[in-house]
Length: 206
Image (tube, rainbow, N blue to C red; front, side, top):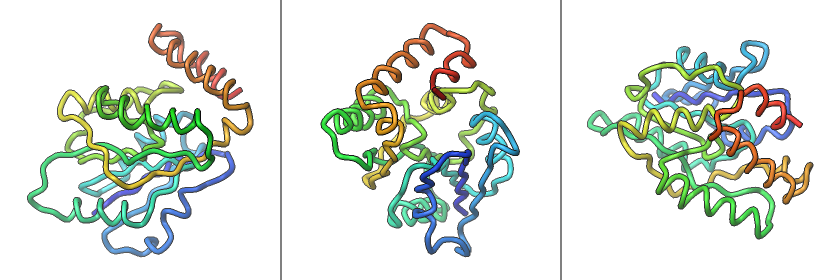
C-alpha cells in the first residue's frame, strides 16, 4: 500500500487535490489529511500522519504542490514490489509561474540541494520506505523537511524521480520574487546559526 499524507493548513491554493483525482477509492492507496486542528506545527502533523499510516511507501505530499498521475502510479508500483530495496527521495521541482529567478531556484533545488547535498524539501513531495523512519521529527516550527533528510541520508542517498512536482509560487507572488528570495536566504542562515525556530517561523509567516 502507498500512504499519502497531506499536512494541510488554512491557506489557499490546495494543488494536492488535483494530484488525487481518480485515486480516492484506489485499493492500494490510503489518503490521510492532517490539519491544524489536530496539530499546530507541520512536523507534528507529519508525525501524526505517519503513525496513522499503514503503507510500505509513505508520501508526504505538500498541500500546494501538484503531482502528475504517473508519479503516484510509480510509487504504487514501488510499494507493491516485494523485492524492493529501501528508497527515499522526491520529484523534480518546478514553480507554477514562469520567471528566470524561479527557474534558477528550482534548478538549484533539484540538482544541487537534492543530488549533491541529499536534502529534499517538502515541495518536492518526499516519499520513503517506512522502514527508514527510526524516530519522530522534533516539533520545531520550520525546516522539518531538512531534519527528515538529514536522518534518511545517513542510511541511503535520496533519488530524484523524473516526474514534475509543480509548486505554487504564491509566496513569491504575494511578497515579490526578490524579497521572498532574500527572506528564504535569511531563514536558511538563521537555521544554520541555530536561531530559535519560533523566531524563524514568525518571519516565515510574515
